[in-house]
Image (cartoon, rainbow, N blue to C red; front, side):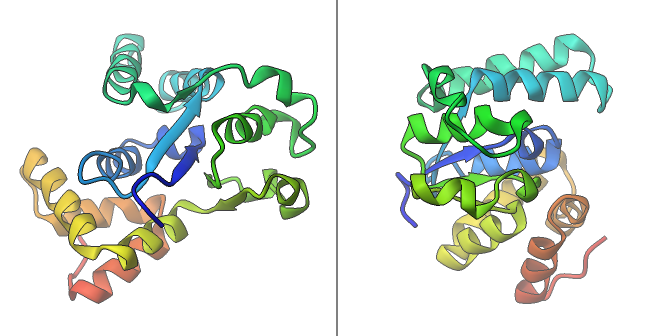
Length: 187
């Protein structure tokens, strides 16, 4: 993997705050990958934040503005014409279309069943669970991943083990792998 490696982040990995924070920090300098998404993905994140996670609409709007400001290159446009030729799960065809238009090699999603290999192989695109993706990034450059976890902890004024512990709800394999490697006991 390289820093210009284009990765489409599905809404299900952008909506959970702790997971999103780590993924986006890993896409900041020194970045380990280059994130991509489409308008439909950001719309879905907004709906999830407001309707499922209880964000006030103003906070969800602020999140979106910040993401669009800090990652302007991530927004992929003109993917809609490709949706009809995608044959993965109907609700997530826009995600695959975004990946095709972006020239991405990977979709990071918790909904792997929506992206069967048979629907991706013609495009030379793969899907990975966020735990697997984060473990790959960690094995590629553990120093950067740990420094980003520590930065999150410092911003929140908590020990880094607490941040990693919080991630067990969305990326348990990554949390366990990282904790074992660092000899951290999770909160």
